Length: 493
Image (tube, rainbow, N blue to C red; front, top):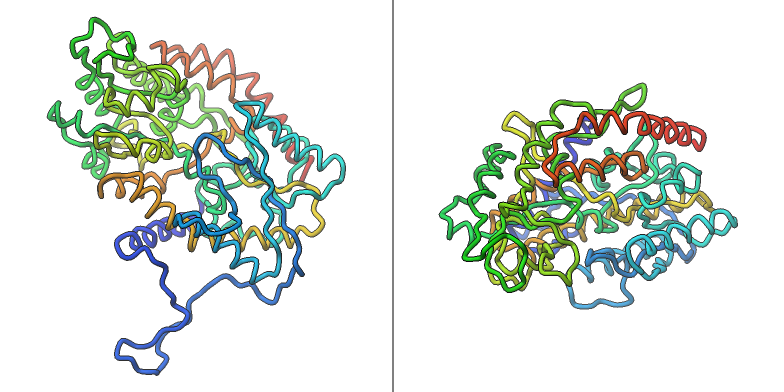
């Protein structure tokens, strides 16, 4: 990350943290006086977005989006205010930018019909429009990872080349977007205009009541001191797991067994990322794979011990109708930790026990900072290659992202997540740490590492450490995929 981007991201975090300590009502800095009431103008005018004299003459700016998906907040507009702070912030943002640029924001929603079918339908809608030379959509929020060909086959605009976008500015999701950039090209990106990528940050929640029962210290101070590591988490997990009168750790809806971790099936990979492993390195000359790194072997060994099912350390369940469902299990007080996405804090609002939020652990204390993976299947901003006026599209998206950062993101974090989802000041403090380390695994979005990750997950959950054999079996095909993707990106430039 460039120094400018890093400093902008940190500055933004401090500004938002400061706002959460005071009133959550927006302040009007356009018309100010001195503290004594003097009319003398000693203040500096507030800096806002530079709209210039642009006028889009009532143009209908159309954005394609899902109607709903996985209980995430992905709403782009409302026909009227609802009385909910976040909804109203979204509504007011759109009306402000519409007034400034004289256009009409139009959200076209497509029904989410389930894993795979829903994602393919929304992706196909865009590819068909581009193939037909149809200007139906100025922008679309797409889960590119389900059909990476939408990028490599040239259906999307390179956002780094779209006039009017200021991707280096801090009101874009600069840290996450940098992780999505490949050889200077950026085809899918995140900003506070659409909050699904924020909701899908992989985190840990822990049951403070169970910690109290076991006389365990909450991990907050370990996080602050840079000592929250895989080894420390393992100590907690092994202490918490208990048969509690049951004969075994076999899941039983009416049982009493307490598990160390209630887990989603994809999360162990997110923990390898949190522990400092990345599938590849981007260099000036291309991409190199890290899958033969000895560090990965050590991470998998530590995680494999934690995902020991026989001793009740972890249990995986994603079907809400089953007793091992990870949110239901944790919500009923039968797991010490839950590995989940940030949105789960809102899904657990009715939980009787108190829970806390922390980032996923580092590998060891020498690792610099905490890392948080954003789910690869999140819908992110894309711009179809067919555009009547690319600059108009860029300016509108840029202005909406700026205003979202000013008025929507603070409400999302300070009200919706912090006040409604989280239950204590320590968790709100941890949220700042989590936000600072968010990134995405681009090799999954481009379809380079899907088979590898699937097999790696199987290793972890089975307790195997055969990472070298896995690397040997996957390296050639992954390198070929990388070469194909890079060539396609250059051809489409």
